[in-house]
Image (cartoon, rainbow, N blue to C red; front, side, top):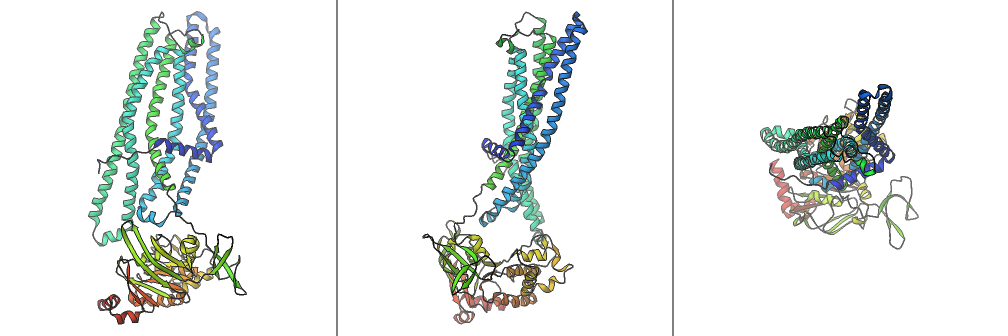
Length: 640
């Protein structure tokens, strides 16, 4: 596992996109911050110039020029330097405040982009990606991006500008001494490329490993009861150790390179400082050596290499190498930020769920035998179907669903459904039975268009569901899943989730219809009782009753019950069944159940086996045929 090569990323493209988005969100703030950073960097590079001027003036005064002649120059230089530092302090405070506002605002917008985009992703994405890894986008990757924007990039920019400014100052002083510094810079760059490049690769790998680790932890937390029941603790520890060891290995390699870099670069700077001092001292002692400087290129008098100039150049060299080291040091943080940004952009750039439907669901009323669209809620719904010739037709929503010769596969070459045909007339109750993996839940996923079929047709009130907008299609369907999901909020909020504009009275009526009202009224605060942790303070059966009430309040013409009573005891099942019978009146209902006693009163029972329909008919008819259903039914009761 540790021998795998860390993945490569296109750093320039990701960084460019990040900066472009930042500027698009905060154009004025970005320009002001940039100006402040540049000003601070330039001011920080100026002390060496003033130091040389002050030392020169003091030297002339000591050599007989008199303090009265040169003391004014010293005072003037000091006042100018103090003034620049005051301005630098102000601009630094402004830039830090603006950076705080921009970085946090930018992260807020990025989180918004991620979450908004995530809501538009197909179910397949969540079926194939670990929840913990997805959570890592919002925590670990966002934090890496924050550090890059608020700390690393500003420091990198500051150091880069100081390097350029100091380089110009050194050229102004002496070409020969600057040439020596350049040789040292070449050595620094080569070392940085070798050592820093290794760190960057492993920092990227570390970022991905953190996502995997968080995914594993999230999975174990959700399944902790199962781990305990099956005494799986030791195996969980061993599996965790494997993931943790991989993260440790990548982090160790990354930090090993990073920790080596600064001492190496620091020592190169020290050696360079000594060499400049020796060579500068030789130049100062041998005044006859020509000093070629940047100023001489413009016809100015060449600066004399004397002690003040050497002292100022040494100070400039120290600043120059320190800032080169800072640039090298910040590269690793930038690489980590880019790795986090790339993962974030990967999530944002995920292709959203395709919705090419154009038929919508509208409120309607019937006038003189015609369906007419209206704005107010009437309790009557219709499909609004625009046509290519500019006309629009309205079809009453009834719940007539037909599947014709449907084929489907989750993965290419592995068919799940083959030649499945189902006919559900308005008001009919259709039940699917069969062994686990026979394709029962898949059929309901196709009706919802969580997945699109490979071949065949699915029609809803005579309309191909591919033509219906997915949001409108799903709004017409009520679903009760086997796995309940309750959200943080009151019981009333969770019931209202099925219809956001439902009144309290409608929610209570839905709870009574499903049989949930009895236990809800006995809760500490009734319908205002807070639920947390997926309703951890409720039993499994109570959570299922709330989810049934949530579907009931939506009052849809079609209901899909996927093992809706599987987690409810026999007594509660009897209560729910009465409510479900009332709920199913006048609706098309699809029922998936392993408890065959709950499907006896279905109009049609469809028996599935390995994605094919092998039997179809009423309970009595299938019992008479003594086929697969008969075996399942009689076997189930024998086991009971």
